[in-house]
Amino acid sequence: MTIVSRTDFKSISWHKSLVLALAFWISSSILLDFVIMPSLFAAGMMSQADFAAAGYGIFWIFNRLELLCAAFVLTAVLVRQQSENASISTMLAGTLFAITIACTYFLSPQMSSLGLNLNWFEPAHIPSGMNQLHVAYWVLEASKLLAGGWLLKREF
Image (tube, rainbow, N blue to C red; front, top):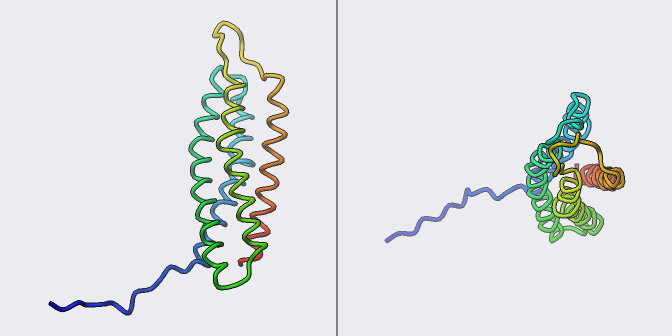
């Protein structure tokens, strides 16, 4: 029996993969925040009875995609840290991961449960606590875009 080894096997380029995943993540966040959600708002989504369920459906999918991107970015930064001193990049990637966890498991479910209309005979209205949650969402989103942009600038 002969064992054949391949010496031409190419390893993953963590730097290219990191930049690609981070650019995809930031651009998709900008697309969702500044194109899709404002167009749904302008179309009258907030006045519909099931706006909370539709919004949660959109954010459920997007938040899981964000979790994958955040985990990959953090992994790529940690792998690259072995070869160079990248403590700021590690801190930025960890911050991005923490923001994504907070949005996915705390903020989005809270916003959708607050906006859920349980009485079908009353017209839909925006609950009073929703404004504070929107402010928290935009603060986290701005922080995510700043940290992601800074990390992208450092790695590009």
